[in-house]
Each structure stands twice: as structure tokens, then as C-alpha cells.
Image (tube, one colour):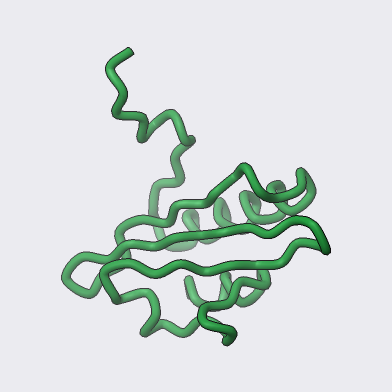
Length: 95
């Protein structure tokens, strides 16, 4: 289900479409070309063969791409019964 969402959003890994097996390694990075200038990077982390984290680099995509990705990830999280947090939720700085 997660790999299918990444494919829907245009993400690739090593020049090919993601598969479920790509989501069970310790860490993997997927990229999507948004247009001629922008790309988007999405990283995943797994533990004991199970997906634990999806981290989206929000600084390199257009607003339209960002909104499309977040909308799709929210739907995916809902379907999986997972949590989709905001970036500040994971902030570990003690400012």
C-alpha cells in the first residue's frame, strides 16, 4: 500500500518504481521530479523489517507538489491507522 502511494506520487528509487521490499530496509531514499527546477525527496526508515518512519523534505518542492504529497500521505496514514505528524512534532531541539 505504501509503495503504491509512492508510485502514485511519482517517486522512484535507483531509477525504478518502489516496491514493498524497498520499505523493509533500514533506510531508503526516494525522489520525484516535480518540474525542471524542483525535486522532492522522501526517506523511509524500517526496524525489524517494518516501516516506522516516512520523512518528507519539504524545502525542495513546489507548493502544489507539497499539497498533493501531504494529502496522499494523510489518506495513507488514515488507511493504515498510522499517525501523520507535523514537522514540529519530531523536533528534539531544547530551545
